[in-house]
Length: 298
Image 1 (cartoon, rainbow, N blue to C red):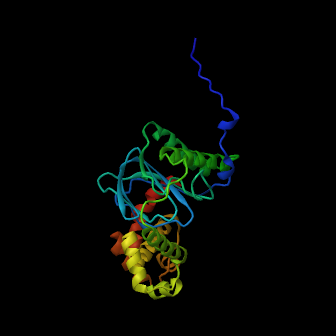
Image 2: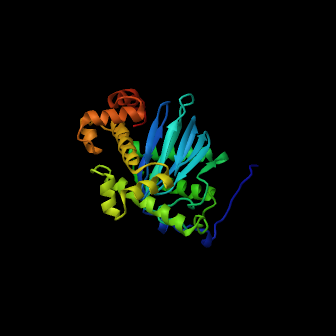
Image 3: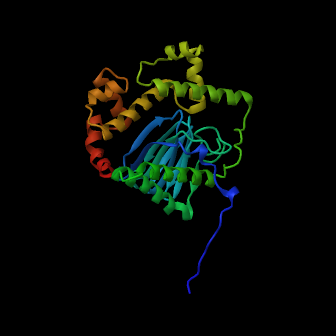
């Protein structure tokens, strides 16, 4: 005789999917076997990221705070959070990242997965395999394009969102960040500047231009961003462009010159020099070294 477990759900136990039924997957990224992988500072204006560390080790920097992540860790990044990642050269990072938008979880602002005050790094424990299976399912469905693959992939994404929210204990009304009214205003202003740069990073941007847009002195803008986010406006602009260039080098056949133009540089030599300084190798060398590995997943 075999044991049987059966549970019944009441009507009141049913989740309200109206807030997540339109969730949109923007990207699924799997970084692996790249010991020198580095992605510069960037942020997402209206999208969140859920990151599962399958193996290896990496350092994630979120809003000027660094977190050491290893196998079985989960990292959640809300919209507007400036972040970067670097793989450990001795223990290459093997990480899955889901970038999603157009959802709203109970008690949180649109596209937030956890409370702004919640700790973004969590241990998955027994849920690690569940997270891996859902990430792998999204990738498999996208690659095979079987019937209803979009619905299945988005159902898996919704599962990851709810589980991440549950783990963070933020499925109750979000708490406001602690701090003075002045500190919150400074943080809000810094995020406005970051959001503007993210939206216009392909265009010519200078401190003087930012001063004209926000009607505040260039010195004040630079000071505010450096103090609140640990990076100057121009350095953030460069990091945002180089980060986009890395992605284009690995996922497109665009020439280095075309990529330079796309991310905001009309001088290919200047772009290559900046790229080499930030990444440690020329754009073409970066593509040659890492693209073959990246294509295994596509």
